[in-house]
Amino acid sequence: MTNLDKIIAAARSKQGQHQLKAQDSSLPLGQIQPRQEDTRPLNSAHVEALMESIAVLGLIEPLVIDKKGRLLAGGHRLAAINLLKESQSDKYQTQFPDDRVPVRTLAFSAEEEPELALQIEIAENEQRRDYTPVEVKAIAERLRTAGYVEVKGRPKKGQKALMPALAVVVGKHLRTVQRYLSDEDEQPGLGKSTTRVVLLKQALSKLNQWQQVQPQSATEKALAERLPELIGLMEKVLREEQ
Image (cartoon, rainbow, N blue to C red; front, side, top):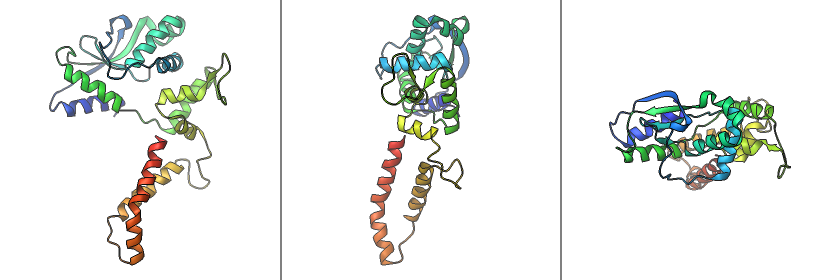
């Protein structure tokens, strides 16, 4: 299930049995109408970072619109596309030939059903595609080919910093992106997919299972009493890695 499918499913579940038919296509940029008001205000720095990534990678997630061309999801992406057209028209034409932008159209009117439109906007803010380390590394290579470099501290004038751009594309914190790109987390003999976070998740799962077992000794009872605190700390670590 794609990220957009998750958004639609989330909105549908909130709307009960409302059927949302979606169609993938493209639409001239000028025919896409922005929302009159966003629940999440546009961040200019985020828009600029998205513009740079779209210039290199294209639009990874299409915009979501209603049947009249009104934007439902993707306010930052739409602003970034408009900024790219204004500031780097050659790259805009490369990524969007004939001025057409990938969209997914939902068969309802945001004007007639504003509550459903709001639910879809909120659902998109709640849903984030979880890129695998392999996908992150592939995107990083494409950015490097386009001139992005890994720098320590503030980039020099004219430099394009790889890590911040990659974090914007995949929607993760810098620390998580760095972990995806690093081989230091891959312990010898454990296999490439067994990172410290994976091991922590596995341990957490086992501890949650053990909590369902009735303690048999005084030592086990003491452990059971302290286990909720330990599990809480493990869950906090995992949240910080997201």
